[in-house]
Image (tube, rainbow, N blue to C red; front, side, top):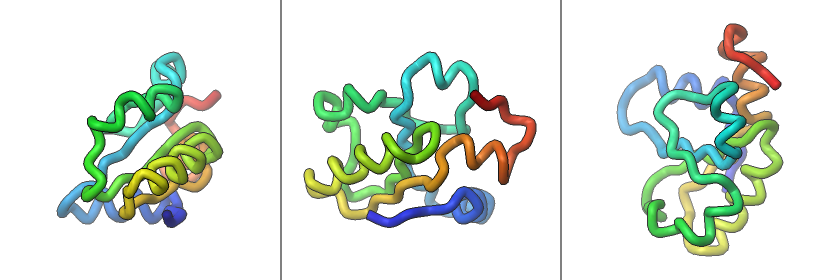
Length: 106
């Protein structure tokens, strides 16, 4: 598992090509405040029971509010055979501060 900065993710999304799965592990109420586009939402507590929704062969960027929950989920996925994993450093909070200042924060 590697760390990915919000600037790196933004560059990858802008470049086109194959887009990684952006797995947002926050709770539903958090997504109502703000979220990145085209995410797959599976709350952290549901990851073990919804693992079949994820493809271990696809590049996956795990996202949360500040990057702590996503790091835990990325480690869990890594222990289940996922190898193309990235943790979004700073989470959606960093995205709002560095990429999209119009994004709501909490």
